[in-house]
Length: 197
Image (cartoon, rainbow, N blue to C red):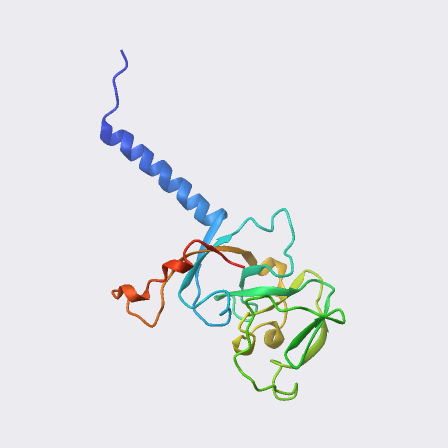
């Protein structure tokens, strides 16, 4: 008759296996990122925490409209999150806040917003009048949904595909930073388990 293993040993083995699986998922499949700026407001708010699919682009290529997390090209210690506006080979320009792609108006996503009524000439800022530029091969032109308050490809160039960490898929937690951690008023339950789009 086979002797049954102690219950503590069974639980320990299960816990270790669960930890290994969780670490593997965290390293290779799913990432978790917290939104720390207002550049994506309209779709993602400061204090939102999002799941990122790290395998999203292993079999497919990024598409226009995807929200991606990537290594900031100007500082590899920082991760940014923005929306893809231009694909490799596209000709992009911004004229009086309107985005043009290959000569046609590119409709803003429903979540995009303009919070500043002023329009700056290109000599003063790339924010409202920019380009035209051709997106180089294997790179992507990105912009924040909060168009008047986002430092993005208009200012520092395109994102190399190698810098892309994954595609944002869902908000799993949201806390309004105006409230301290112990104040339940900061919790935003309506934003939990909401698709990032």
